[in-house]
Image (cartoon, rainbow, N blue to C red; front, side, top):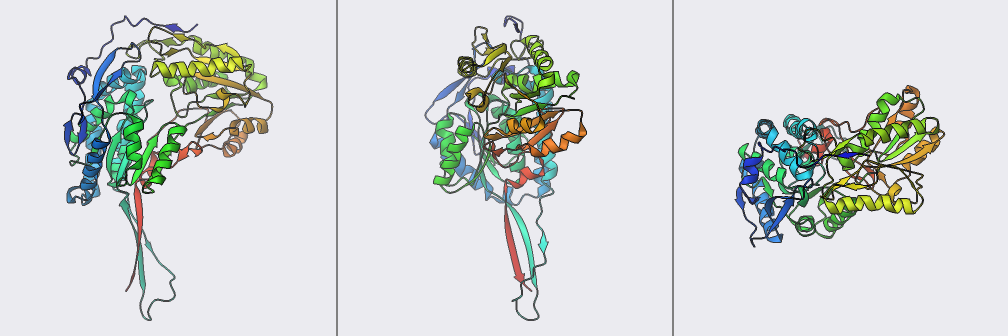
Length: 506
């Protein structure tokens, strides 16, 4: 059985102590930190202990309206609209520098608020967030239109046409971010939006707002003009919906569940037909071929689903393995899961922390229990551990079929389902038997099959002999019901631009 370390160990938050000890965190509108207008607050909780970390101002539609007004004013101001690309680039790079100077504080806040192991925050996610700002500081200076030689045949005699395109910031952007990897996923929206010259109203997830507050402080310190970035914390159903419906918001960039994404899209359509970018749910397959190197594949498959407790949009939650190696692979992954050390994220020995909230852990557990009632087989794990109610064992479920919710729906926890195949066509069919198309991985030593299978999988990202490989230069985004648009890479900044064509008779 997976071990759960006691929370009685000394857990250090030295770097984040000053931020936490200052008390209630505030809303940021037009360059000023303010309480909620009606004084409302909510509490953010450490999922590893159940203890309250901080109180946070709980915004409403009134604060959203003022934040949008501030963002619109800043968008049209000379200070931001006419800032040279090099100016925006310098600010983005300065944000990255300040984040780097405060990396230990940001890492501790992320771990305390979300639950993930500190090494994940410190060595993967916070550096990834920093790199987003560094990468897009370079992209800010590469935004360009083009000249076009047109073939218009009816211009006046002895005249020529001169045509060109120009790219403008799309406008006021509402960025609605999730709780699973809060800071890096926020950076993936803010950095390209700022590089494009947009202004922003940021609404972070209620469970994990602390690093968003700290990031906005850093943006202010880096010299962003007042109103360019605004932060309103609080309920998604209230202020998230208000942003999606707001007639003066030009675009919503949302990361979260497909269910909520549908509501965002509907609200955008019912209001001002604002542009929408959504990165939604996933049910990513991992195909393991008979020639796979199991020394590489076993830990790779395990980490693809157990990393961050499976709370990853692209988690490899469906194992599709060749019959000839299925027993050996499944036992290897199960053993890997059983040997993982679970505990508070700040404990340096922890390999897997708690899930973000007790209610979410109970939802994950219910998927497993319902599958067993429907005839699935529990291979390993399956239990909640600890007093906080947030710790879920690394779990493997076999004998699943395509009609089970655990096979079709995003569980968003450390739960791996197993399907067995005998030929490539069957493997690809199983992989594509999903409403989602966010990512997939293929484990094989056979180059001849690699590109054939990768080309056949309906997903926006395919990894080979790896999973969860991210880089600021690599675009990521979903097919099917996993979303619209790309984040990271040069494509990302295009999401925050609108094009204008100009034709002149000379």
